[in-house]
Length: 473
Image (cartoon, rainbow, N blue to C red; front, side, top):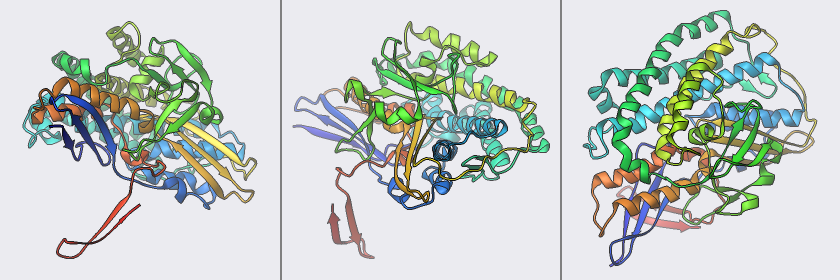
């Protein structure tokens, strides 16, 4: 008889999701889906609010990557204001964004995924967590904790809060960097360099053990999207977008924030609250693409910093064209952490980094604005419309997880077909299927804003836990 295997919840993710695997009468996998089961409404919450409040409001979408929302939102507001922010403010924002990238990537690699990599996919679930990693590899575990602390402390020093800082505002930032804080960050760099070098060495030593997983962890040709500089180097905060095809050729270049929704659409499936982004000229699902560390390293020709550049050259030797297996997201994250540390050090040597002119001021000069940036998980876009009083009349957010959504679902199906045979599976098999999703490091809290085709069920229980009412919409 046909059977459905349900993994609920999917563990070691930011947010709430589940996986369902449908087996046919022969016990073979027929279909599989990754369901994002939580629903939020930030786009509707924003309506009626003054546009200058948007960065601070939108940062509340996520406690892991609030800086990405701050920056993309502020850039959309600056398009409405029609201003260019001061040079020093732009540099400080870049540093803040890189610090967030470092801490988020450290969380993903060390806390969420390294238990599988270091302890094994079949290891005891009771110890398959970051504390198990620290017990098995103390030096590496401490390095991961320190790298996350490094990024978080820079966010705290710049924005005065580790989570949801209000420092980024339309027009720039609220206060300049002091020499004392600059020197404190510089003093943290040696430990950060040592930690990421240790992690890269350790990863390369164990990666060969996972050749079977590399083969089936979302390993297929796809399109890729990310920001890129004019000199073909990696970019997280500025620049325009490039979309490449499965063989590495450019499909479209120079995609600005104002053109994003002209070329990128969002489809809705009835099994998930997260949308499915796609490149409109190719349609859905053919126009689906991947974003994030793997996409960024596939697209760029250079990292722009010496140590990360050497790592990129080695990374690109994995394949003749784009690196396809999403298992390699882990490797790409570590390279980006190294880049982030190098770039932060470079920014701190800017002769104008302590300049006190860090904010431009203006009112409503346009009734529409869009801003884009690279979040740790990939491209993020905020798009707003306002009335003449500057109140939000419409908002749209295109989140990285939604842009990876099709690839995650295809990857879950690919792995399930490979590992589930004759209707039989082990806990380790189910963990591998979960681990496919973890390679993308989805942020489900950020991503859930789909049009409500998926039914919403509200159940009222009494004090004894018995159902007394239910509303289905």
